[in-house]
Image (cartoon, rainbow, N blue to C red):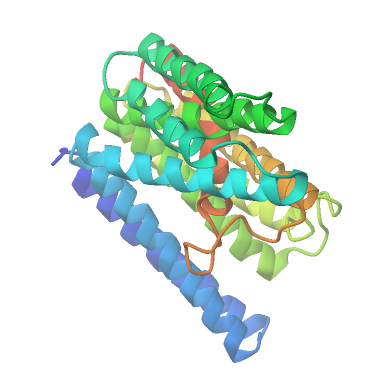
Amino acid sequence: MHPLSTPVLSIICGLTLFGVFVVSAIGAVRKPDPAKLRDIWLKFGVHIGLLALVLLAGAMGRFTLLPVVLFLAYRGWLELLRAIAGRYGAIAHPALVTLLGALGTLGGLVGGPLTLVTGVAIATWSAFALPMLIQRRPPALHGLLATAFGMLFITLPLGTFLLLGAESYGALAFMFLLLMANDGLSEGLGRLFGKTPIWPDISPNKTWGGTIGGLFSCLVLGYLMRFLVPEWSPGAAMAVAGGVSLFAGIGDLLASSIKREVGVKDFGHVLPGHGGVLDRFDSLLFTAPVFYGVARLLGGS
C-alpha cells in the first residue's frame, strides 16, 4: 500500500462528511419528493464508493489499477458505439473495435508517454483495418470516425490515467480527488444555489452557481492537498486545481453535446444514479491527458 493512502483516505472521509451536509441541506432547503431525495442519496453513495475504489486500487500499484482502467475503457467503448450506432446505423464488428479500444490503454502500463502513444496508434490502425478486412467491403464512414474519436476520448485518456498512476500516485490522487469533488459539489451546490444555466442548449442542469461552487471548492482543496505533490508550489497547486475544474466542466459539456446529438439521456445504466461510465467519468477523460502533461512540466510525475 502506498504511504499516501492514509492521508488520501482522510481526505475522502472529509469530502464524505461535507457531501452528507450538502445533500442534507438539499433535502431541508429544496424539499424534493422522497423518491427524488432517495435518488440523490444513492447517487452520492455511489460517487463516494467510486472515489474510494479507484484511489484504493491506485494505492496498491499499477497492476491493481489496471483492471479498473480496462473495465472503464471497455464499458466506455460499448456505450459510445451503441449510442452512435443507434443514431447513424450499424458499426462493423463493434465487439472487435471495443476490445481493441480497451487493450490500447495497456501502453500506459509500462514505459512512458511514447509507449502509450504507440499502443494507442496500433490499436487505432487495427480497429480501422481489421473490420474492413473481415467483412471485405468498405466500412461505414461514421464507424471510422467513431473509432478515431473513441481512441482520443476514451483510450488515450484512460491510458494516461494508468501511466500517471504508475509514475506518481500523489499526482493521480490529487487529480482524481479534485475531479470527483468538482463533479459532486458542482451538482450539489447547483441544486442549492444554481438557477441560471450556462449553456441551456447543451446541459440545462449545469448552472453558474454550481460551476462557481465547484471551482471554489477545487481551489481550496488544491491548496489543502498540495502535500500530495510536494514538488509544486502552493500557487502552482491552486492554478492546476482551477484548471482541473475548468477542463472537467468542458468534458461534461462535450459528453452532454454528444448525448444530445445522438438522442440519448444517458450513455448507459451500469452505475446506479449516474448512468454509464461515460456519464460519470467524462470529466476524467477530458482532463487526464492535459493534467499529465502539466504534471510532467511541474515535476510531479
